[in-house]
Length: 220
Image 1 (tube, rainbow, N blue to C red):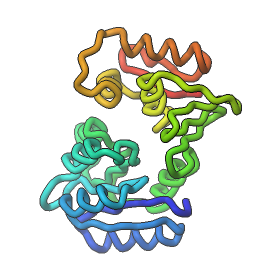
Image 2: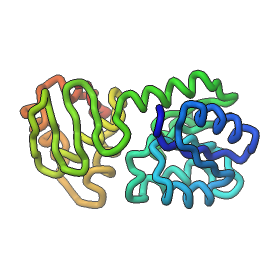
Image 3: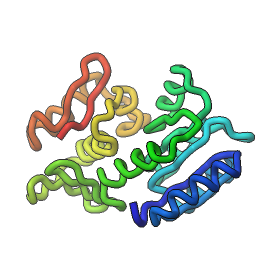
Image 4: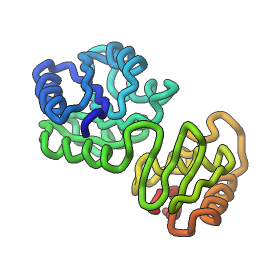
């Protein structure tokens, strides 16, 4: 995890210091925030790879902070792990709908949290090149490589593949894909399916798995 940038956001200083100590020992670059406004300011300048985000903050709650972060250029790929004393299903669903990638119920078990962050770090090389299986993505050059062969593909296909690869095995709902890849553009109902079919033709049927009635996930 050395060199990974992590932003820790919690209104309890003891928790912030405990988490900071543990992740600094892993040679990660750590920034801290005690409220939502401070978190947004530091996130925009620090560009963290991982954000540990408390849900119950004194000014702007963590759900809104996450929603705002997802609208900041350069932070859409940050890995957001919610920390919360509330473990109810509806609270966790709200976190995922806001753009969170994981949800950890307090009290935080540091070993489990470290494993989650390590899994993220091991899944990707820090920076703009993402690796999984025999496929890699260079987000600066807009190049997809499979088994050492480079492929330049249309922009929307690239963005769709990058989104699915950002969290392998996570099921991305259709509405989530539409929001993150096409934004406010009005498209036909079958557009996502057509782009998935084209990616499968280029990189293999096994790369993207369909979850009927829900969406898609990267399984390559």
